[in-house]
Image 1 (cartoon, rainbow, N blue to C red):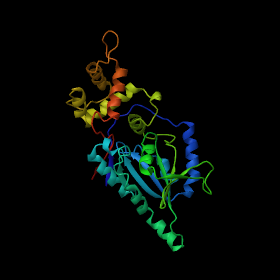
Image 2 (image 1 turned 180 degrees about the vertical axis):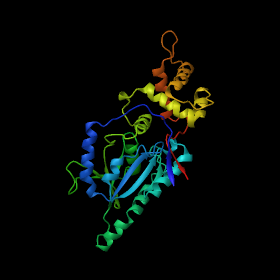
Image 3 (image 1 turned 90 degrees about the horizontal axis):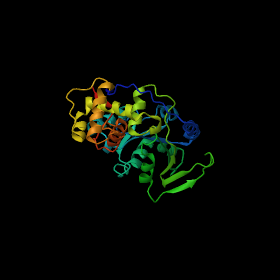
Length: 299
């Protein structure tokens, strides 16, 4: 059995669901009846928090492929367990790095495997060689566009409007066996667990302009002190011997980062805002190392 192990003590309440996302969701509801399989990209650093629960409702009774993208940025100790977690729930899964292309080539074979029953039904009806139709979904900044560019390659062609498809939608023909429908990156209207919003903000899936970056960096420091204290030591030469208890206790650590990186205000006071931005960028660029923000564990 795989369970989530909580890692963050959250005080931030982050919600972000602009109007264009609601419109995109309605479009997906219209399109889903044309689809054989749904390919969902999640971020391997937060596999559950980056998985849109609305997709489960939309894709009911459809074959499901789940790709753990950016696995090269996550802690490999937990990525394997997350893969097992989703496979136990019936997903066909793969680890991919959209930017480098690692793991991308295997996706088409996985999609074909996920659709074996559908292909067999078609053959019994005398329908031969109809391409599998796949919808690709994911939250903002999960790397979906980069994945499509890597997966599709130069050989692909846009097939244009199809019967029954709302005018203006473009399908991408991968080859004679598969066609792909892209969708906009969307979140869901309300994060029931506030830690989800914080994790999404940390990986950059929520607009930074609506977030208090200093508070977010304190959340990260608190988490690192408990699970990755070596990241702070290796990057900033700040040693934490005991896990921090609350966000207030994380403030002195952020001040030390500011001093060590010369993030100073006039008079030599630490500039916490600049230090916070630096810390978040170091996390997002893996300069802190490969870090996973939520973990499963096996019982």
